[in-house]
Amino acid sequence: MSDEVAALDSALGNDDVSSEATDPALEGDVESQQEKLVQKHKNTGNALFAEQKWEQASKQFTLALKFAPPGDKEAAAVLLSNRSAALCSWSMQLRSRPAALSESRAIFAPDPTHLAQLALKDAERAAQLRPTWHKGYSRQGAALFLLERYGEAETAYLEGLMLAPGNATLTEGLNKVQAVLAEQQQARDTSDTAAGSDGRAGPKRQRRLAREADDTECILCMKLLCEPVTTPCGHTFCRSCFSRALDHSSKCPCCRTVLHVARELPVSITLKNLLLKAFPEDYAARLAEESSAAAAAAEGDGAAAAGSGGSGGGGGAGAATLPLFVMSTMLPGEKMALNIFEPRYRLMVRRCMEGSHLLGMAQVARDHSLDPIACEAAITECQQLPDGRYYLELTGRRRVVIDRSWEQDGYRVGSVKHLKDNPPEPGSQEAQELQSVAAE
Ligand SMILES: [Zn+2]
Ligand SMILES: [Zn+2]
Image (cartoon, rainbow, N blue to C red; front, side, top):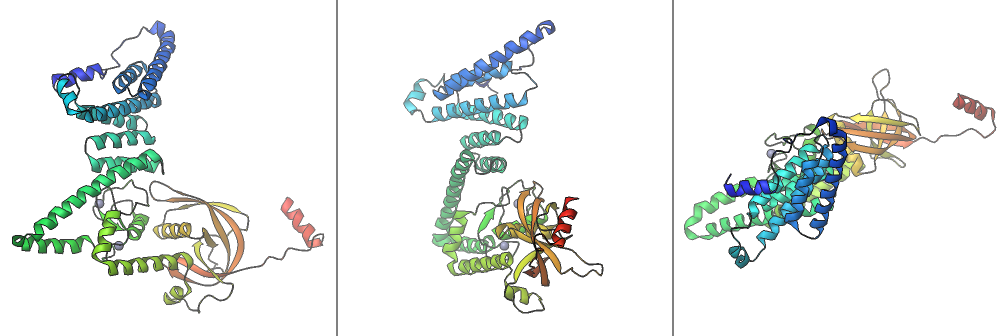
């Protein structure tokens, strides 16, 4: 660390906070006084921040941090996050300053890159103290962007979005960094093409074409990439292939990196456009293939069912297709919680949630055959846990009879008809008996 940098660090108060001794006899008073000081400096810092006085604001947050009780991680994380934001803004301000001004004051001005590094350090500490708070990641993303570490910035924003899906600041940051990444990729591609158009670079161009053929193929289905998604580790798959791989493991299917990503990665627009341009017909065919497969799985297409080994004909009048969870049946109106961890049922739940949210709760009889009476149930709550399991809450809707059933991608699907319940006449003996049973 240079002298100049060390001086800046101490000006910002990055020295050891715990070295200050306190008199134990006065601790109670000291504590409440310290609390007041923390609040005072924090408020002043926030006010200065609003006035865009970044340097003074960051100094106030430093003072607040100095008096913050060592055990209060939440408070420290907020202060660090605020200081990180102030340092980031200060860094941006210095960067956008006209050259003439920075030349005349060159000696006194801190280095914007160093400020961004300090902002990153604060953001990382904030995230350590409060790992489930999205702001730590949002600040990391902003600082990494300033440091031009775009890949890492993208990862930070994605991690934040896992904690706060749809957050506007995180989404904006992610879009900004992905735009830069796409621009860089495009610049690389054009420079490659330019080299290829050179008469002497014939072999290089051929190599490029061969490489392109590999890059446009999904390693999971060996077909042209369809709706490509790219993981933080940089590997690209068809969106549907990637979702199915995640049913089995939360690791990247290519490099085995553990992925802390949301199941629905955004489609890489730039790559998709390149594919559409290069292979318009193949891409359209792949899209049609994918969407018909998805529709068949979600709705239980009769023809597809017959094709995959169903013994009967197409679904008759009044028949519907339901995916079946074979465990135990339930009663209409009954509620049940389920933990889904088997890959085949994860796939089933995922498809259910893309479609009608309905499934059939079925059970096997003593002779191991499927009991024909089952219950149609609605998924009323569905939480995906970080390790890929699902927590479900179901409510039984109505009884169904399973006409026939077959296997689809490892789980059971049935063609079902609804059973009509005939409630007894009000006031009849049967109704009275039922009421007394229900009251017990
Ligand atoms: Zn694929
Ligand atoms: Zn990977």
